[in-house]
Amino acid sequence: MRGARNHQESIMKLSARNQLKGKVINVKDGAVNGIVTLELPGGQQVVASITMDSIQNLGLKPGVDAVAIIKATSVMMAVE
Image 1 (tube, rainbow, N blue to C red):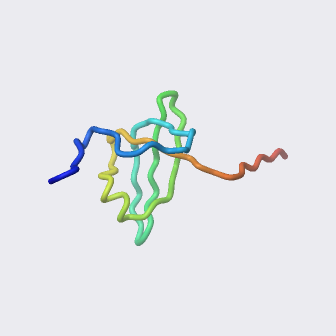
Image 2: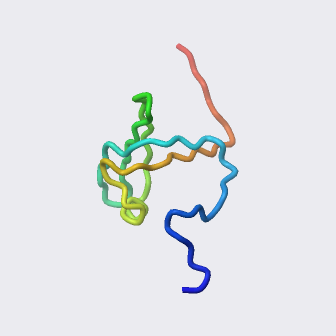
Image 3: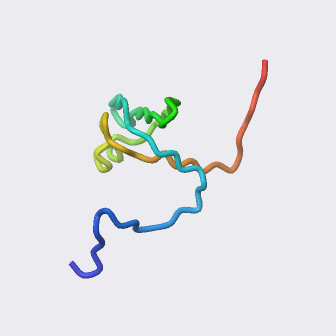
């Protein structure tokens, strides 16, 4: 296929600076969306709700290496 790229080759650069590499430890399937838990090297976890189509297309399942990419225009903080 003309213009095809090696699967390992990076296809695009992202403006998002918050890219957290980890390993999928849990996927909870839902009707439309699923909940994916990614464990970071220090043991912290990132939990994301994404579509079941994306879970299947990305092959997300326990043991798979993945990257959580966080892009937000605002961050809220709170105290009691």
